[in-house]
Length: 177
Image (cartoon, rainbow, N blue to C red):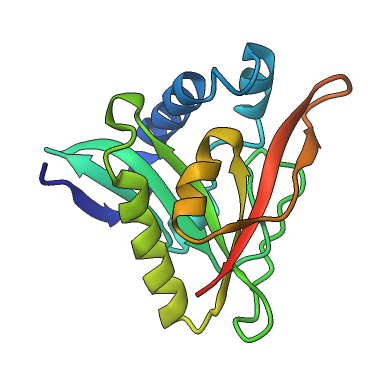
């Protein structure tokens, strides 16, 4: 296949939201309950338009159709959509802090075809070019194996509060680059 990687644009947001929802619902259904998935899509998982403004979020296309997305950030926020309550857009210091790998999603039909790896290589090379020597991310359970293949180490797990009664398990991970 001949896929094209490009910087995401503001006009892509509606398509990105659909891809994120479809990817999460299909690829997470063996790891999370339907309630966890739907609640996570309201805040913890989704489009962060700051990444698009920063030009650090990417799309992969197949014949002009967006089939995957993901990026990295030089800001403090580790995960979450524009609706996430813990957002922090403070810029990081590349000499003492880790760049963040953010919001990787692949349409289920294209899963396990190297698109996540393509995005990771792009993010790593850009972070290195900006002076970062460490990456960190917050993985969903279905994403852990991809990140481990790229040298990320699990740092335990967390139960993230989605509402008063529901949590979802995420896995903090990091690596030196």
